[in-house]
Image 1 (spheres, helix red, strand yellow):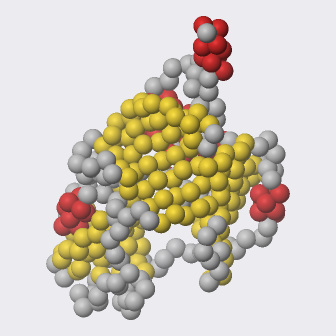
Image 2 (cartoon, rainbow, N blue to C red):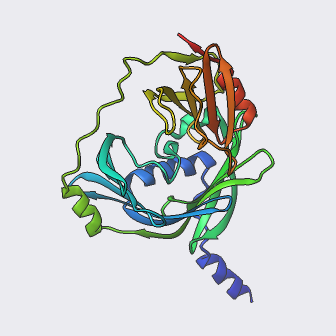
Image 3 (tube, helix red, strand yellow):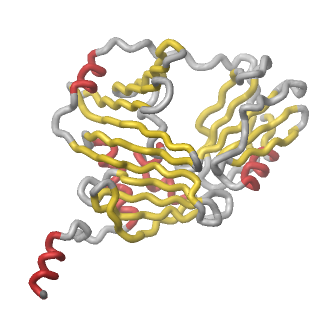
Length: 309
């Protein structure tokens, strides 16, 4: 019996030769996401909605190539060649933008400097469990204040790649989950990435024209939140232009829409579901709509802090 137990300890997928801190795990993950060639079959779960997708990443002739395909519904794909991402959708011509990665699978901050997340979150080691047939180490992101939600991620013990990512509200209820169901490493990039590296993709579109835009600023933002996008465009159902501002702390994303014309109604498509909060505030002559997977009190305070420079 003792020999049997010893053998189990030796071959156990949960044994790890080196004890790492939570931050060390995340730093290794960030490096793996940037350098590893792999294919991940993924499901994203939001309340009663399940979205399957496949993501591939590799290097072809010194070019960093990535490919994302949504498997349900109308065809929708994205291809990244170095710092250009091209979107392929069934109802519009392909278009390209400058971007260092394809968004929509893992939070953008997981690819970069992990230290930036420490402004809003504490990293805590959790337990280990088996996901997609692989041993995974859990890391918790504990919010440092009441303005954001907690999150947790499981990393593959062998590759450090993400296996599962959860967003939890203040009551620890699951809001959203991204989980790998199959993870495959490869030494040579598959043919689809080779073809993507050689394809002549559309030129990068020009940035939105902001000649009629107004310069808005926030007099208050939660620690760690930064403005990453500010442009002027039109929403579905609105003939008047609106200001769009995107905020993020690396894990949580907030969208703010400002109607410059007070008589312009906001579209009915902006609804609240799957843990997504939305608030509407009047700021001077403007109507402000803020939405994101954060507490509604956070959105209210952000919207009320909006002011013209």
